[in-house]
Image (cartoon, rainbow, N blue to C red; front, side, top):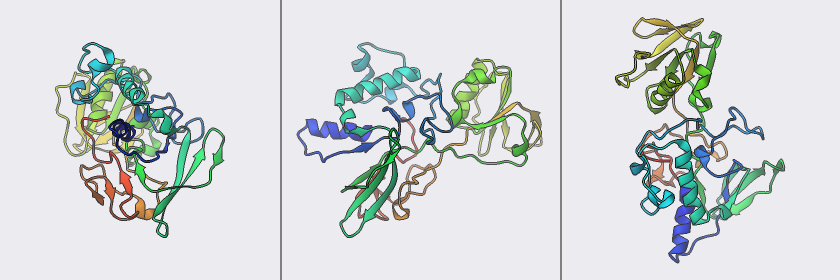
Length: 311
């Protein structure tokens, strides 16, 4: 959406803007902000893109998130609190997108299946599937391709000895939708970053009995409520009992992986595909955007860096 907004800005300024086609797998705009109750697969059998949960609030002040040319006060007509809930942030973004009139460029419910660079013609052939009509369309040719599908939708899910026999629920934060499910439960969160922090406190708010956050590199180190604690990385499971690196153990009812996400671009041919961990400077990209290892500098990656104050 950010890319389309900038094209709209250039068009307003009288700059020449190329013909644009944006393929979007979901049925509406919003990316991760497009909340869905679904987990696993969507109504078309495609992997669910969204990691948004129902009662999410911003963990960064809106002052660090708002766009200078379209502020929250521009959108709402008044000052609002610094840490708004999910719906407020999403409504703000939709206001910008509507103002820029970018929906005309988007083909919804259309998933990209294959992108190949044609050396002879110096362009790309993009093959897509119309999900509504269950139809694979003929490949279309483009001069440039921008990869802007994000990298917070394919979960990184590590394994631990014995977890395959754990008798409670095991899940990734990607599938977390609301905290009521864990009322009265003892919850183990594997991870020590934003998701673990936020989900721990939200589950406590909605009635979780006890929460352990287990860390690999370092603890978050907050002054937690008495029901929340941190322990070194879990090493193994024996039934409901989790054993930790410091020799301690605890019985838990559910395990949630707050272990981040993977870069995944299965629709790109090998010479076009970025392979990277979630880092500030992914390899192979000139200026963090232009792919150098294939596509004759005509394949652009947008927003693949590790993200801080961002949407």
